[in-house]
Image (cartoon, rainbow over all chains, first blue to last red; front, side):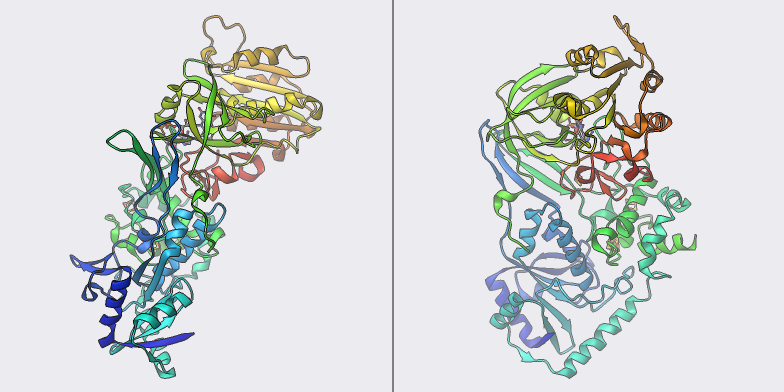
Length: 342
Length: 278
Ligand SMILES: Cc1cc2nc3c(=O)[nH]c(=O)nc-3n(C[C@H](O)[C@H](O)[C@H](O)COP(=O)(O)OP(=O)(O)OC[C@H]3O[C@@H](n4cnc5c(N)ncnc54)[C@H](O)[C@@H]3O)c2cc1C
Ligand code: SF4
Ligand code: SF4
Ligand code: FES
């Protein structure tokens, strides 16, 4: 592992250099929360946050994106729209990087999806270790305190300076070209381990009362558990738990026609399996008619179905669903612990 | 990560031209199509395509014809929503988008030399017709063939000309029924399961292929089992909402399976214990 050091006094210069050369997206405070947005000046970038409202998946799978463009004439050409403009995504916590790694696998497996993959390829991801833990986070228990891949650079706030781990050659080039660096010592490396385990320890306060690898098995015996019905009776079918989740990726596809009635686009937009019509077809049949069946489906997807593909739970413990759910029934920690109790 | 080329978008349809349209019933039309590129569709009976009318949208539609040498293929479509209404308004020579073929197919090879029992309910006959026609095109490759077809009422019976042909053939058994009789109907009245008492099968060598509305499966499977047909020789085609056809959008899931890729044709033994399947 290769570590470098950037003095805090030199950090703004690095960010400014990036802004001068790239489109930079990063975390900004907004109305008491944190969001991802365009960074136009170094002081806008915030690396000291607990959790953003919406996850960075929006950069690779936008809430709404055009897949195809066409003219409404009989022989017109249909053009796929695949974006690959390079950009820097600065300030992604390890749990969100873990989620991105999972999405990379999903969109690359089987029939690869270049609309996702090319955006992903075009991004330079600069990770940052959390300096604070959101009240509902449990990423430490999900094994997402650190990640070994999925970032080009990884920053850790050490007080006076940042330690930067180099993840890829692209990251190294970026750093060497734009930052004033000092070599990191083995003491720095040791201090980084200490800082990381301190924050991870705080996060460990929330978590499962049993080993998380047991969740798929637990679910196998829980299809008819009364909890689905009981919890879902409070569900608003609002889909917030899907929207905010960094590992939810279901989408809808529809055509939009321009006002000139001569051109159009086929777009995809985020969809959510908690929404009432998610599995409803034109005959009126709804294959997940009840709130309980939709509510259960989400937990089975996170804890069982996708496990077969990812060899891991499709939940990274960010806690966004828990803080976003009005009746507070979306939290995986609460639900799985309750299921375990019986 | 590999770098796919722009034209690799799996959402990009190919143009196909409508070469013939036939009104089947009040709400169903048959469309004969040919890919503008001249290449064959390359489907196996049971597979489906994603059909596009640009500006309106896309929908999964089964290929209803058997693979043909002249490169044309047929879709039979019920008018029910946006896309299906738009396609019903098109005329010969119009162009539509086609992606696919997608999904699993009927046991065309596995059933060779064996007997076949086809059970179609309503527009379930659309996908099943592909396999039935394939079998009739290669009649010597298969043993006994029985076709059972049930419709709600006489006016919802599709492919009338072919049904009559099948009924007249000596080398297959064709029986049909309607749930509710109507003007001019002289045939059987009753749900499709009532036809089972009229047939004889050699269960160990019979493949039972079932396609129909969701409510039909459970009852038909009970009848097939009562005849002694082994579970692993029962195949079904299931319908779910679909938005991509390539295992990404999440709409078509039955528990952990994706109907667009793991289906639509399933072996009964692969799904009988899935809570969301039947
Ligand atoms: C594997 C498969 C094969 C099919 N084969 C045929 C066929 O041969 N002939 C036929 O008439 N119908 C078939 N259907 C049903 C057909 O796809 C729907 O009737 C059609 O999608 C309705 O689209 P719409 O735009 O007219 O309706 P809308 O209600 O406007 O539907 C909007 C969108 O929802 C989705 N959708 C709605 N209903 C269905 C559905 N039943 N299944 C999947 N997605 C749906 C589609 O993406 C559709 O474009 C098949 C469905 C599946 C899954
Ligand atoms: S956020 Fe809560 S209320 Fe809304 S759909 Fe999810 S579980 Fe239901
Ligand atoms: S399920 Fe909830 S806690 Fe888990 S990754 Fe999704 S939003 Fe975060
Ligand atoms: S139709 Fe999108 S996953 Fe099957």
